[in-house]
Amino acid sequence: MPSEATATAEATAPAGATATAGATATLTAEATAGPGPVVTLAVVGAGDRGTRHARWALEHSGRARVVAVAEPREPRRRRFAAAHALEPAAAVADWRDLAARGRIADAVLICTLDREHLEPVLEFAALGYHILLEKPMALTEDECRRIVAAVERAGVILAVGHVLRYTPYTRAVKEVVDSGRIGDVVNVQHLEPVGFWHQAHSFVRGNWRSTKEATSMLMAKSCHDIDWLQYVIGQPPVRVSSFGRLSHFRPENRPEGAADRCLDCAVEPDCPYSARREYGDRLARGEHHWPLAVLVDEFTPKALETALREGPYGRCVYACDNDVVDHQVVSMEFASGATATFTMTAFTEQADRRTRIFGTRGELRGDGANVSVYDFLTRTEQPVDLGLTGAMDAAGGHGGGDAGLMDAFVAAVATKDPGLVKSGPHESLTSHLTVLAAERARHAGTVETV
Image 1 (spheres, helix red, strand yellow):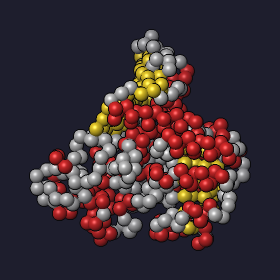
Image 2 (tube, rainbow, N blue to C red):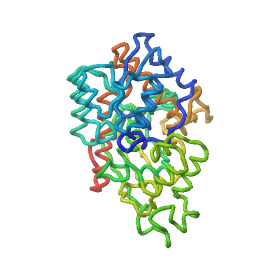
Image 3 (spheres, helix red, strand yellow):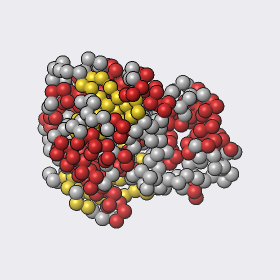
Image 4 (cartoon, rainbow, N blue to C red):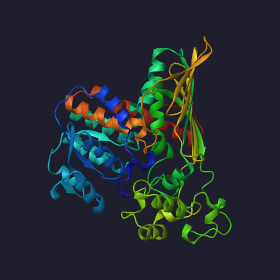
């Protein structure tokens, strides 16, 4: 979870509120090893994710403080600097200007676009910065391995932004699985309902529409889910296959009479993907954050009309330069013999992920907010207490995952204990290699070894 240059986490979900106080308190109690020193942070990329992570420092000023930011777009840089009371010299346009000053903070949050991760990681790691890196860590196996090698060589902590590992919901699911309550895991079904309008915004009109300009849909949006599955099951996949394609958002599905832009379109009132309605309604509701913040720096009708008239987000969804899939299935086999299927689809309402885990003694059912276990022996279903959480999308702080990631990372830096980080270099490398193998399988029609 912004400018076209720094909107790294647009792909994760809509942004808005921070995680609930209850979720934050729960996660803080788990990760924090003591009061410790105040950890100083530099932020590279003040888009949605960089701003959201930095906001955690404002809310936990006794534990962390932002001392510098690099952001190419002046309005965002200025707002960020004002929010954190930064001197003008501490707010620069290019991250290289921060790196040239040496180590001016304990840690750096790298929240640039996906393709721009490798160079700053290598540079800041060599300077001795601990690093929180937005997902995906990189887009190729070589770059992922170079990142792992760089942080290990420098002896610094790396936390990759797999926020789903840090939620109370995930903790509850994993505790059930690890306890043996449902016996041995045999099979898992996991669904990511992307949402029709989110697909149109991010993956048809937006930054992640093109594999050449960005990356695959599976890497950009669903590396979270592949990572989550291996974490919950407790082992990485050993073989994968995958199927998926771009089915709907294609020129041949363009309605008769449709214009190139929604503002000029006679059929726009009857189109569920209308940019005029989607962004106009959000402006009317005062939603001055993602996704509207991707289009405009000033939240006015005039600024929005200009953006829809001239920018990429006003285009007809059937007349864009997109090529990423709008639905995909990944099948996985694990070392134990357990299997899992992951489904990503655009054609849903915006909703939480849904999971069913089938064991030899019971079945776990989860929807991102609730978990229940059906016991084969007693033939009863019992809810699992999660505590208070927000929604599993970014508007709800990923169900406490955003706060949990920052809490764990800051605690790890303060105590010099990388074990507090659940999404370290090797765990993240494994999930990224699985995504890359799944994409090879989809293109070649093969079963790939991870």
